[in-house]
Image 1 (cartoon, rainbow, N blue to C red):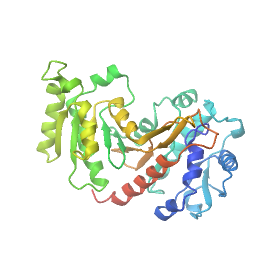
Image 2: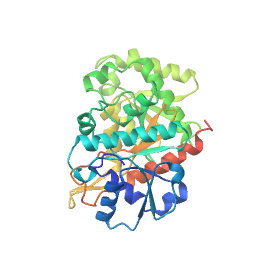
Image 3: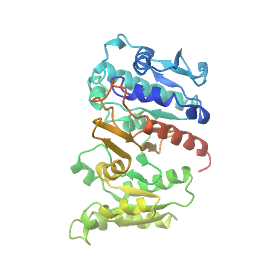
Image 4: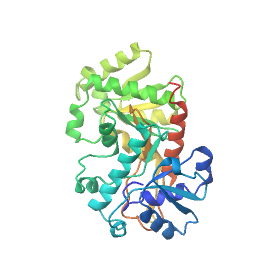
Length: 335
């Protein structure tokens, strides 16, 4: 469900109103039924609500929204567009629930709607996002965020840290781990012999040490070792060229050194702003956490509190996240 004050419940209702979702999988939503009914009424949805305690009780029938109930003392007090500890706690408990279901083998994959980090912290849950929650409760040490669309796939050496700290995290071993995770992830997405491009950290990839030494000391040695393992990897490619090359087809995936280096070109290619409506017309792109013992995909956008409750949020990214989750579950044992 994501944060109940954001657009998560709305895009969930819209996505689960599509027949193609049910032709691909058997979806069940983890959330609060009062909030979901409110959103369904707001949208004029023709779905009927089926409140359950476990996935085994779901009807999995188009036209019926199966909701695994999460109790809340006063869900009616949660207001769209308003950060609250109550909303953060409900979102956190939904994540914990789906992680447990997946670890127990009761669901094949998990798909998350957006959460608000301020709300999580207000509720006492000191995590910087979904990825960190999943890694903590699955006891995973080596993981990475992969952003995926049809033409661009980007993985990150570091994500939710300061830019100053991100530079310190550009280390050979972490870069090597990220290349391996990317190679495996691309293969699971159906690319049998992936071509991977690795970004430099500095302008012009350091220009042979003129603008920084991270390329010579850390990135190049990591790429060399990955090649010895048989991975088709090139770099360091200047960051201002890498993503254009990948968009044109030279690389199947890109390794970015830090959060914004990868997110900015990815969102530029998949997000479309509508000036007249003052909202995003479409938000394509899927966030996949690689390295986990379970499957987790997500939308690659935030809670959009500014449009929550207005009924204008696009479900495109969530639909893509569901498709990718199904694809990963089908190839889980093949790689």
